[in-house]
Length: 317
Image 1 (tube, rainbow, N blue to C red):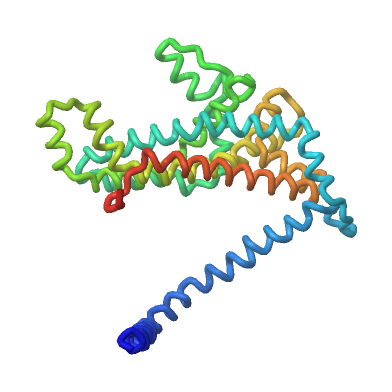
Image 2 (image 1 turned 180 degrees about the vertical axis):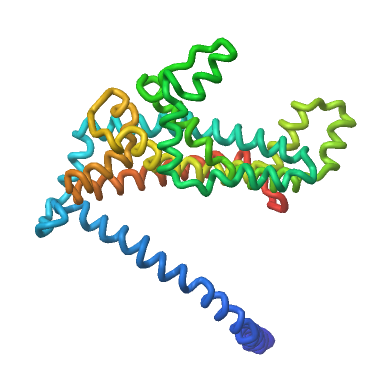
């Protein structure tokens, strides 16, 4: 009887709590309602349409014809899919760790600047707001093998710079250098994380005789590992979708097929060509879904591995 009397009381208390919180819940739904509408209209809706189109032969003009899994079978027989995927994965491997290292180095420098860090933080973040097409056109000049600023600078220290935009071995590293232009967002995230590291931890390891490298390895990296993991996920996904700069630099004005074009043929560029140059919308949709699955697998692996290395303050162990 006591249990039966307690349950209605608990249920009534729960309802009263919900009624008390309802105005806040309603306000929260009101704030996110525009995002939900945008997500349904501009993300989920197009994803469903592309999934349907991936099973059709559709050229944007005529009627879509159902072809079953033919587009997906063609993915495994098209040599350019493997080539574009290989280029993209190599670029991801070059760019993501390089960008994270550069951003972390800049953030650590800013963390020591003191009051002037606000000014430099703005300076580092401004390039993020530059249109990516303009960045691609700019770096096409800066990376010129003969007259580019980068190779001229390297000449000053006795280094003969490569042909960044024509040598197939240096096209992807050159594009990775181009993308470093926009690491300002990561710098801001790392700087915020570095300022949250308790100074007591550094003082404790210094008492144990730890040097700079030991402090960085055993205190800084673990304490900002959550931010490092977040940026790794975001940058990996962004690198897998590399398009703007590569298309501007190698597929924009010039349409000639050269070796450098082949080296810069990233997956999303090939997808774009299939969809909007050859009007193979069904095949392009299948390409998009393959990229989505690859991105999900890579992200799942990163999340799985991160459980061993990422530290979250307040997490139960």
